[in-house]
Length: 588
Ligand code: ARG
Image (tube, rainbow, N blue to C red; front, side, top):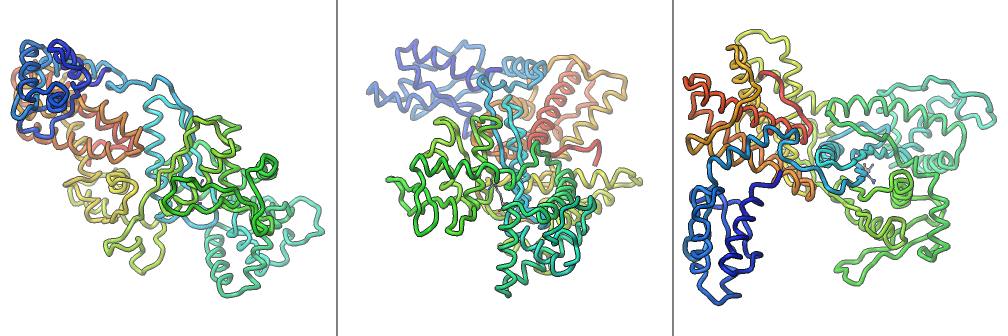
């Protein structure tokens, strides 16, 4: 459906033209003075310079042409030359009725759907998921859902960190603890056991132990480096161990992501890119993009317009080992081969920005992607504790994701049980749903690139700009609708009529804005725009609700109109929270 502002702009263009002014001056925006008007056009101010006339004269003549226009309730020229617009109530009601009929709630499908790979998650195998990976998962999942809603083909890839030193460290530590394992016997040629020689919890203990040792013991570290290299070069026993490590931890990761309602299409990782490295290196050398500098193979990526030094992108270390750059570049080669995407989006900690600048420039310069392939870095800020420092457990350790989710759910559970007079069997499940909204909304309502403070008390509150407040609003609507049905009525059919009071009109205007929010939110990869929209929408609904006796209304037509308005409000809110990656329970 055409956006409401576009309808308005079109009539304004006609009016500008009719007055012999350029139609390009007829730009319409939502009003920044809702006390005075709903939409506004400031074009007369800009036109004043071109036509050497007072802006109020221009505004005045445009306004005159619009006096009988069915789109407006009122059109006014005010000093020094603003055009203030109020939308006609019938026109607005018609617009909402069309939204109700539209299965996409007014949001148009992309005319040129793109294939987009989104790289988010990025957990490191064998290391427990911690809050640092939470943001990537939450933000990436939302961007993925927005893209799909707009009709793009979006492929989510977890891009596991499964090929680095942590693997060598685990292998080294295991070789000390259980040297008798067949994996360490280089002469062994038989099949390896199917069962892993460790459990998840053992694995999670082995890694930090090994990592600790490597920091104080040079020999140990060298052994781990050597084991990493041998793994990458294909030593059989190590590959078999690697497979066990992968299986055990990927299973565990899947469980954790499922709890977050985060779902990847691909469970690929750095290791999958390995096979692409030799050809890529050969290509970069042969085509003259890469050269050897102090033993290392590098590609220059600095550009004239740079204001800070961008160091060359290192492809291979002097010992021939590959690096983070190398796997990311090889992964681009792989993704181009597999999907030929129009865009690859990376949702990663903003401290990795330089890395991505280097990788993107190298990929473009060496024509590893098409000229119009977009490479987008969505860098997010740090999640801090109330003390403003990176989030930790109360004891000061790294907060594991499972524990964080557990603490939130517990808090939610308490609140929900306190609210109940009767015992609720679903309280635990409800607490999980509301808890997830608290975490996700708490994160997504901030601009991704900013650091933010993770404040459990605030995030779990039913009041204010929080996930639970949004869910509470949805649950309130659901309960009105189900009471209406219990009274023997149907929710289907029926028209939304003209607003009867200002709070109803405000709610209607918010609803009509939906399509104007979703498109730019995706273009800007900005879920926070959806959050601020649903916060406004929920507020508009709650004001209307407090001023209106809906079910008590005697005029059945009027009541039906409100029920339809509530139905639309519920659908828009539910669509939005689905785009953010959480759901509403039936009651709270
Ligand atoms: N595993 C990395 C980390 O924990 C994040 C990976 C991000 N994605 C990428 N393609 N580099 O820092």
